Image (tube, rainbow, N blue to C red; front, side, top):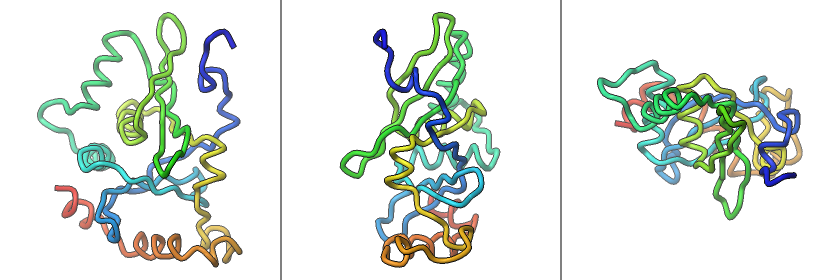
Length: 183
């Protein structure tokens, strides 16, 4: 593989493209969470994130432009000045209940992969209009099927009380919840 990481050589066909659905507060853990869904919104993946990253993602989703660049705006601007572009971001691994991510950049010397927390990678992807992917392994391990979108209850969902509780939490969220809890 000539020293290239698996993400530099792997095709996106081996991954699930996702989009950010919402940012909110997990009422059980009282932690910010970003929820990504597949493009058909049939499966979702909740990811606990830090308050600053949740706010950065929420601000971009809501089109709020800060008076001065935030960290992810700075990252976008630095990449632009260095003639590099975000090719994609990948939520690449899940180990010990921690998600791992990477940012794949297109540079003048070729593609470069940068290790990143998924929250930072997502915030940057939103600012650069870059695609977000979840590795097939993470998708198979952690994405939750939306019963309503799938047309009924699956056997895995019927035994997953935590997933059901999270679905109830998501159903009750409003945009005001994000503003109130992220400020």
